[in-house]
Amino acid sequence: MKSKGEQRTDTRSQIIGGGVVGLSIAHRLSQQSPSSSSVLIERHSSLGTETSSRNSEVIHAGIYYGRDTLKTRLCLRGRQLLYEFCERHGVPHRRTGKWIVAQNDAQRRELERLHAHCADIGVPVRWVPEREVRGGGEGASSVTAETLVNAAGLGGVAVYNMVVPAALRKRLYFAKGNYFSYSASRPRVSRLVYPAPNPGAAGLGTHLTLDMGGRIRFGPDIEWVDSPDNLAVGRERLEQAVHEIKLYLPGVDETCLEPDYAGIRPKLSYKGAGQAGKNFNDFVVRMEDGYHGWVNCLGIESPGLTSSLAIGERVGELFYGRKVS
Image (tube, rainbow, N blue to C red; front, top):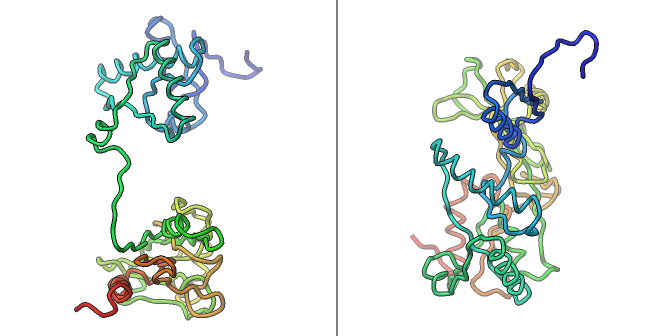
């Protein structure tokens, strides 16, 4: 099918989609009919950039579907072909095996049903005895201690909420800080440059810093995000950064600024202040009432790195009541 004015291309086959499935089809067709041509049509500039490259990286066993379904039949056959392909072409892979773990009686019954299903479709499985689980080192482990310090950073509130009752649970907010590299040789500076304090602001402003090589970098700014995994620095942040930088460094060459990297600050309240003022968020380093021997370190954002040794000292004081030299 073609429209008037289109350039015609005649091929034996056209495959829409350059993911792993489309590529596999094109590969198979080229093997079956070497003299004919196939065209692979992909909307992106690179192959396999969607689901094919965002997955669990597992070669599946094909045991979770009905005996006569395509999912079962194609997965079982595909697994065999994929292992052969990887071995033939030197594609890195491992046959790791898999443990399926039941946590209660209902799940145990489901495992028994699955075990029978595997026998029916010819997938080798076996029950794993407890001694093998423990001996193999992959079972659940426990550690006992007299004291516990929660210094899990971005995961600290999640750990805290695992223990305390619902009424005491906290929510963590993520303040992303974007940084921007600077490639110009001017201004020549030998020290850090910060904007004037803004009481109640969530950070200290997009300031000028120097790395160990003397290279200038600006940041961090403040961008409230929903996930600590949101670490990409978008160019849309650059315009605002330029405005803030020029308030205290008007001679900066904005054409030499580029997005660099980002970090996440854990905040205990939304738009919580990073400096003195309204809604100020202080560090939380405390022994929890009712939980003897449990210290929580929450909301440890900037200047957490600088404060780290002193935080360790404070925790020692909470446990032992005195400074340790």
